[in-house]
Length: 161
Length: 188
Image (cartoon, rainbow over all chains, first blue to last red; front, side, top):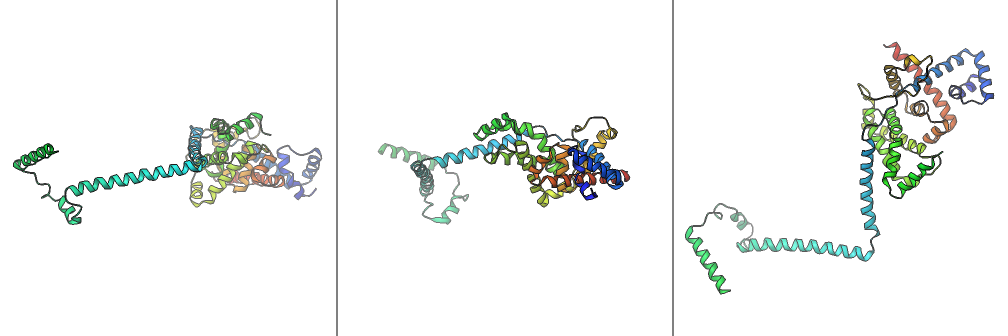
């Protein structure tokens, strides 16, 4: 056995995993080779030291953190699979309902803003009116007389209806 | 070889029983964390460990009973660590890690012997530091063999290398470790 062949058996010798024939051949070589003998001793010592190295433990709450992530993935997947497995007609129905809700929202927003702005005569007058609507002049307090007039005309309108 | 109850847990987890997977995480969390801690240092070890379990969960359908969950999760952990190391941001964290770290430890070997005097906390720490100075290839084999206690075939499976390569890398890793420890003692 030469040094190269002997080195291939070093790890197995240190870990006591050699076949009897390999062990005998290696030991025969070690008796005649001081260099290999020194190397194998160093490796035995290094293996003992490595086995004494600390084993780090996972931080507290590690499993909980992992499971939190996994449950979030599960929730995503279940929502996706629910949508994916829905029958086609239900998907269409759902899409139509969604569009209807959006349309209603847009329409009612437009209707309300139109009523507010139209009621003050602002919609027709464009940007200039809009600027005027937020001016201090527009927000001037009404006089007590005009308040009475407004109340009376409202009453009259009510009676007419 | 995989244990029967582990196979049941994996099957249940595949069916959507996340508590079954939780049992597996609890069992292997220290092993995975220890590997990631040696491969990456303290800053990225926790994230990499978490990623490893999440990858395992996402790929449960690809799991095969041979070589077993232990070897499979080890392989995922090693690959995750290598992915982390390929990213420059992670690389810089690894190189500045390990100073003044507080941690619990236990001795892999507690029998008496010529090196028993070195099994103090301080010596264990200096060995750990020397291990982290080995190259990735040598470190992975040494950590899996001498610290995690995996067999040569399990290491070969986890690292996707031949048994011959495991033996030669292990031999070189031990040789390198011995030199690093001698150098560090000379500098004290």
